[in-house]
Image 1 (tube, one colour):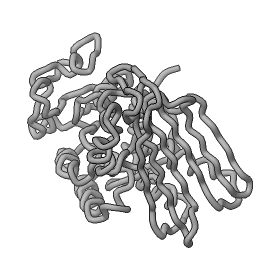
Image 2 (spheres, helix red, strand yellow):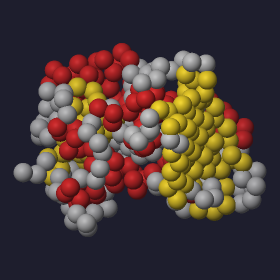
Image 3 (spheres, helix red, strand yellow):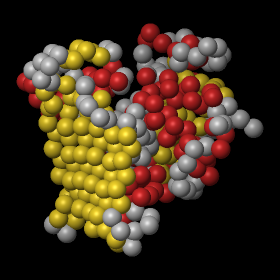
Image 4 (cartoon, helix red, strand yellow):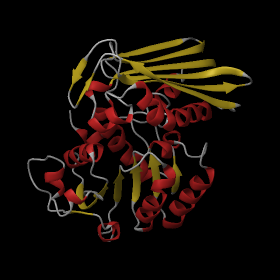
Length: 332
């Protein structure tokens, strides 16, 4: 029997989730978004599908959730505090939830009270809630954790992720400040802390390794273009900000044991994801081209669904689920 779902958030990532879910045979019974331009629009049309889905987008979450979906695919905000009421309402409707909220990937680190409440809500209603995506959720936390499997011991882990923001969606380009002056970037992106999720990834990886973090130290700096770069959605002039370079360092016993290095800017050369594990034995893995965030996030989310459906009720992280792999229903 096909799963039924509500799509909560019909922005660029939400639309990709819908496309992937429909291909997996998931039937949508509702869709929620506060954008007035989407009100009453068929979800299939909003997601750019060839055929309508017979479900209209509404700002009334209660009405959409009243359909009693098996699953809510959630993509609205990075902030776990902002999405808590949305997640609780979805769980109260009896739905398992998989969300792309970055802070939800490991909320026990910075928002333990919210994590406790979400866990309690899941247990109360007999459903599971998970935050995941490509980053956080896989590239800089779950993947390096899995790659330590053949190691007798591990002393340090370094993960480097380089993404050309010029190939990404417009909201992400805006989030990293592409096209801003350095002063504008400092007052906005720099003040907000850059990409959300690196400390959560550091905490998740430390938990997988059984390490107790003394602290997570984070730096974020603008990457300034040395020549004019034009890509879809954005043009960055020479001297303007192209994006960010951000590093989160997990300190264990006074030493830097985890280093997560993210470069996300328009025109970044040689995109890749690289994991370097220092231990017995050393492990070094490089994914040439890297995991394109907009393309791979729906894969991570939808491939997690069968494991979420089988998981114990409550708030889960990717560490709590069975070994991730592509869903058997994804075809060849």
